[in-house]
Length: 305
Image 1 (cartoon, rainbow, N blue to C red):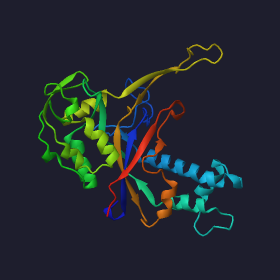
Image 2: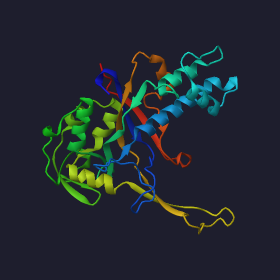
Image 3: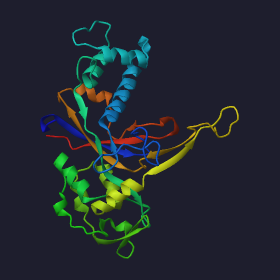
Image 4: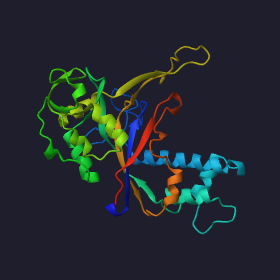
């Protein structure tokens, strides 16, 4: 992928705990979240992101076609089987657009996304409720991928030191979880240089905290949410004692900020925007959506010019 078809940055802010599953776990968590292999940082795989956008687009198109006898299954089937040149007068325009956007069995779509990487991770703070925590490595990688922001050469941090907002500070110290840090300065310009959407930037400026790389790695590996779930026997209304009735699930906590790059093979396809979530709208990602999990807020920014 090249900058010639880079369209924009998509930011995800988790409003509720989110489980983008990585399958069966090998350690103490039965159902872990997706993580990068080399850093163990949380991540949203691109396939899950594109799938969520595709589902959103299908439901949007369905609203236009339900009076014509369509249901979601029929619409999905026609999009998958769509072949350019086979259109008839009965073929809805929505089917053609969605096939161009996301692809069909014999053609690729014009939309593509990268894995969503973490930018800020929420950590409990003794003052200021919680902090949006990041580190020089994450900020440097963001600059490398987007061309926006400051590199890690602009941040001089030792272990136990932080750069943070004033609202987190108690007598020049910051307490995150059970760890104490020394605040060395306040550099709002580092956050402002990220060129985030204004609404998102204003939230983060209130309580951002930049820690060293090792501390950030420890936070994202050890302070996700791990929930124990049980299966209820429908006949007795009590815990089912059969095998597999007790398991643990890992969730990315609410207030986590991630970003993905959106590419378009044809940047003149303006009509496709009507089938994608609007800026500041909500989207469902991951599992357990019927119990309120996986609700994220979408922000768009960083359009390539």
